[in-house]
Each structure stands twice: as structure tokens, then as C-alpha cells.
Image (cartoon, one colour):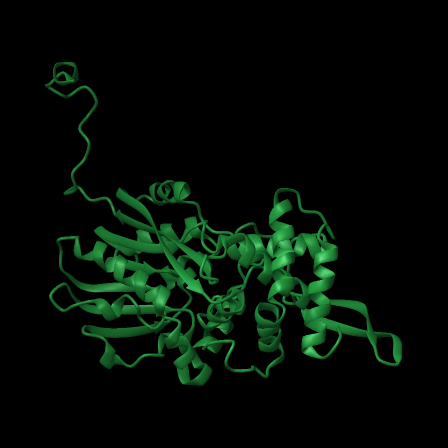
Length: 65
Length: 329
């Protein structure tokens, strides 16, 4: 049940694990950027934060997409 | 019918290699305004959900429906009447029927569109005699004759019915005079956290939005709809069930196991993993609880309506009052 104790193997589960645990700080930075602007969100308004989050995810997943 | 999106992917040594994603897109239903949901897809989702791991996943995620069935039962018990037979419309495995007791009801007829869900739980879990009818609840009058039923109960199934005014009319028609309709359905604020997170993520990442959470009925509309269908002595109230999850991913897993995945006509069946990851991050920052979990709101509208009968109390004619209100106020 606890995501921190068992490492999941299925791709989507791994994405879930890495996006909430491994890359938690990058996710949080991106989320905070959205919250700061959420009444007027445009495409790529938080691109810089998301790129960091996405890079972390790709590193953690060990693959690119 | 088939939507394919092609986008470049950078792979070691293979520059400009493209990978094609194909996802099946359901029929767009521009021809019928009452066709919002893909009923066949919904039936498949629920059938599948009910048989995963022999139904153990499905049983594990009964918590929302069991809670709402319990609250609906409180309203049912408040009705001082005993019934021979009630119809449990869109019963699922029988969340509401399992709570029935013999001093109130003798038989329950469960009707559901998904055979696997309907037959998930054995008869031994019910205190009353149950009969199961596998039928599309949208075509209620093909299952029951007009003026034939004492009571019809619906616990969390009407939110997937395309023609809500139509189903209420059918329920009213199927009831005997002075028959009871008691229902619980998800209201417009249900899963608003998930809805907004996915919308923000899609706008910021992809520059547009698509339906991921169903449109749901507003509370204000329900009493109008009941009145329009010909019910009297209406009672409508709302309530919320809030559940905390570790993250958006667990919520989405559980929704899938409940058979409550997206079944809106014209939905995108493919969501980019960047968009999903973005939505998860937004969900946590925008709606997250202090302890790091995330909340999910299930708004439930409860409704009671009666088929008109001469024996029911009615408002007096205008001007027949004998006491002047001015004397009292």
C-alpha cells in the first residue's frame, strides 16, 4: 500500500511512483507555479518548471518519450 | 473513428524516429443531444472491473457506494411503509439491496446493465429474496409494465443515464399510483478536484481541454426534473462524501476498479503521460491536504418523489383559508 516501501514494476505504476516520490520536489515547484497563475493559465506558462519535472521523470524512468 | 497522433521522439542513435500512438476514439454524437455517454463502453468497463482478481478489486473499492447506500437507507427507513417488492434500478452488486431487512421489504428486484457486476455477490449476502434482471436501465418500460411497481430505488446509477428526464418519466410510469421513487445520484461537484487538475494540466501542457470527468446534474435541476416527470411531494437534498487518497494515481486506479472510468462520447482514450504527471502535481498543490494526501469529493443528490394518488395530501385551493395570516404574524 505504501508507495515508498515497494518499488512498482508496471510502467504506469512506475510513473505514478516517480512523479509523487522520486521527483516530488520538482512536481511541487511545477504545481506551485500553476497555483500562482491558475486563474489565467496559458499553454507553456510554467514550461521552465515542467521541463525540470519532466527531465527528472525521464531520468527516474530510465527512458525517454 | 480512429485518432492517431504522431510525435517525434528522441532515441539514442535514432534521430527523427517517430512513434505512432493510435487510440480508439468513440463516436461523436452530434446527431442526438441526449447521447452524452457511451453506454456500451460503460457496460464493458463495469463488466471488466467486476471480474478483475475474481472481484476482489471491485469489492475493495465499494466504500463510496456502500457509504451512500447506507445514507440512502436512512431515508428509506424514515418512510413509514412496508413493501412487498421493490425495484433496485442500476443496483450494481446490490449495495442498497444488501441493507434491506425483512420487516420492511420482502423481495428486491435488481436491474443492472452489467451482468458481471450484477452477479458479483452471492444471494447469501442478502437478507431479503433477490431477483436479478440483466437489462439496460435506460429501457425500463421494456422490463416492467406500466403501473406495476410499489417502489423503485436507484443508488448511484443515474449519472450514466443519457436521457435523465426520460428515465424519470419511465420510472414514474412504471410505478403504481402512490408509488415511491427514492434515488441517489452523483451531483455536479463530484470529483471537481480531478476535473480542474486535468483541465489545468491539459491547458498548460497541450493548450486545450477535453472531457475527462462527466458532466453531472446540478441540484437545482433535479427538483425541476422530478416535477416535470410528474412526481409529487418532492424531497431533494445533497450531501458529500470526501475521501483522502495518497495521490491522484490511487484515485484513478480506484475509479477504474469501480467501473467509473471515463465514458463520455467523443472522449480521448489516450492521455499523454506528461499531462498525467502534470495533473498529479497540480492536484497535490491546488487541492492537497496538509498531511500530504489529496481529497476527492463525491457530491450526492438524494431525491424522493411519489406518483400522484387521490389519497395523498394536497394543497388547498387558493383563498379557502379561514385564518388571516396577518393576525398571526
